[in-house]
Image (cartoon, rainbow, N blue to C red; front, side, top):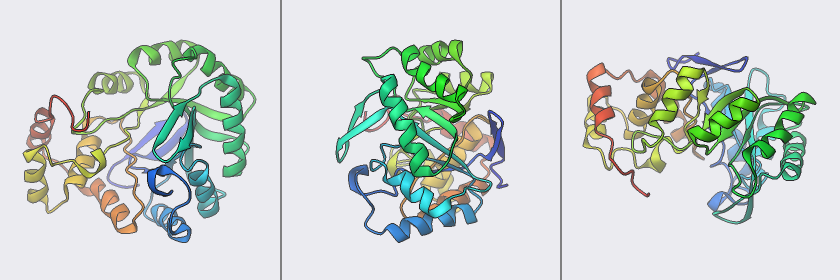
Length: 286
């Protein structure tokens, strides 16, 4: 266990600093990476360093991320693999929503085959489809859980209202939304998840390396600790709420090691407050 501590997602105890496997595929999150052996080595290094929670999706590649995870880590002893369905791809950088039950059933079966498992620990609805009621999408996942193909159900890219609807239907153990020290739109939802015992998994936790460019306070804290801005951003997330499970992604082993070292960075209460109140009203890139 790292200094980040642990959290229980459903009945799965994991370290609070995981790894997001979106970046191990090709440019534009499309196709294979330039160095597949290097991607496999990175995944194995993450586990060597204590990572026991890896998040992916069938749309990363598509399919490539799950295939690399299977090649590198199957049979996943002591590792929780989370994946997602509900987005499709038609080219580099292009994402399309499809949360029809028939698509989700097909996506789930594909993930089971690629990951070489009979049951997925955490299966997340990748995004609500504006053409499909969330209840209709979730019915497919509830049925798959009853059939033993999913252990726990999570949501991604959802509002608090959509979370309420989902929780009326089934136990939701996680929410994965965009959130960082620079992007605080989900502050209220983080609090809701903490109150309800739901893990909150922020994607874009480093704001794609921009953390600190818009906040002088990040620079100051990083300098005080001899750390990088990214490490400070991750340390802030870990301190923000015990419900938060950051999953920084990278394709480089040195960057992976740098990210995981953030678990050892302890912010003082004054540093946390300074970062907390210095967040921009409008995050960069919006």
